[in-house]
Length: 155
Image (tube, rainbow, N blue to C red; front, side):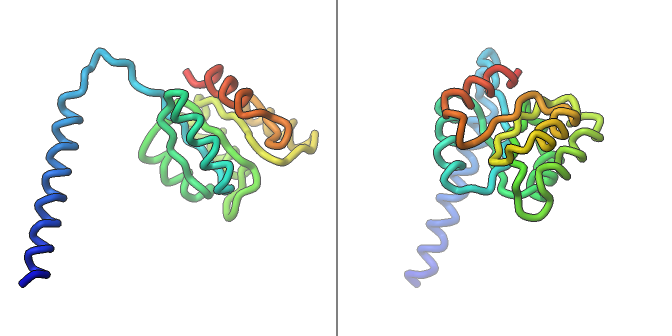
């Protein structure tokens, strides 16, 4: 009997939450500017946490994914204003993802910033040849510099 009551209470709370979310979505002030959406592909948890919090505090909506496969899935759901991409990823790596972005009619117009540990000149040149706007090296770029570059290219 107690378990049945708990289930009913959980269902009611869940239903009320969904109703509130629907009302909030319908009552948004259309005069407010929409936040810019950043799709961020990064598999390092520490960097994800620190930089993600900074980007959110700077006023961006951040969609974080950890793999190239997740990024491809999210591209089908949302068109971001900017893509921040690590090159060293499990599964589909950043270069393969760049190739897919570069050949897609919609995605190829979205600015891409590389934020990676990769430092070889040939990799930087290859990324820029695929339309990358900025190539940032993680250990030598401050959080403030990253935020400034994101603000520059996130239009």
